[in-house]
Length: 112
Image (cartoon, rainbow, N blue to C red; front, side, top):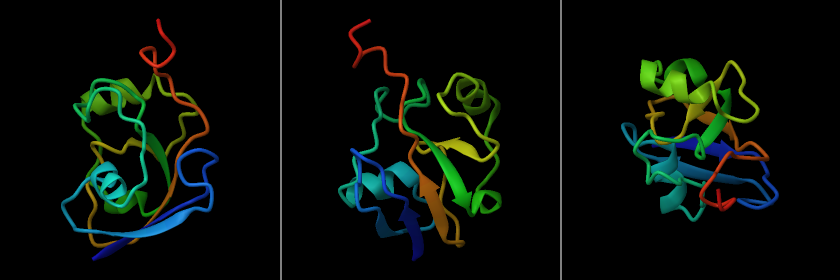
């Protein structure tokens, strides 16, 4: 099992969290299974940026993002070089340290 440690996030996991994930599982699937409700407006279909996370450790252990994910990430709030969409980031054998950004761009939630 791979460990994923989430840094504290005011709404999603105020105390932070450490969970276990199966290699081959996405970050968001592991998070949701463990009660960490990362926003996912497009139901994890790689059609928005609401599940954007920043990998603080372990980024290089993930399969590189495909072009569609990279194009969407360009629109994400707080984009960093180690940003990923958690619905596309498949866990490998290396432990991860994940930060959930403070804000997301969710037009549905904002009633646009």
